[in-house]
Image (cartoon, rainbow, N blue to C red; front, side, top):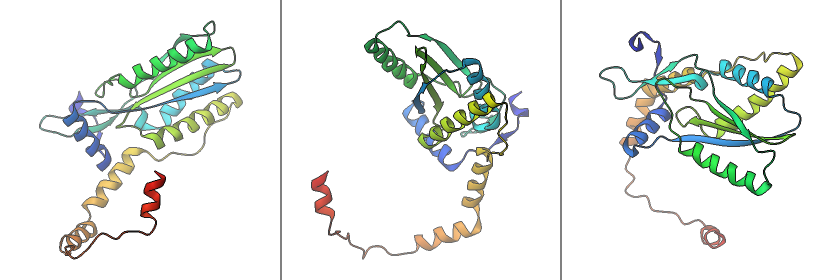
Length: 222
């Protein structure tokens, strides 16, 4: 049952994003497309992806609102990957491939996520030729941003190489739930409140806007 699950507080950034999604009634997401060239072993890629997901809790995190709560908790689960590799475009022209990829990316961008029960990580693998593939990665914005996607792609590459060599990734990654709790503790600390109180008491009425000497030049360049 949900009320028996172990949950973790959202980070301040996640809380802000949650309120935006609620007010806009639109799920924010993060996507990227990765071009893969070479002799790709799809089975090994799948194993590498599963290892990455097992290492990073945020890639298998759902969001649950318990009765009386307006902001959900992060609940770490063992969901699998939403994987789709049934796109073989080897016999298509380059223009047809580009049109398909553009349409697929738009579709991925508009897709909704089951934040309560489903897997947050959605993947689509498109075969362009014998040695060329496109991997589309999509995650809820509650789980990833542009910087996260960049790190994720690097992690997938390292995991794939390790799987081919029969090695393991030794380092223990920092989990986002721990980072979120640390951020919340900072905001709730006595020093933080003292700093806020100091700035509330300052008088900024005498301040005027400073015009930088390069401001006009920068505007013209834009």
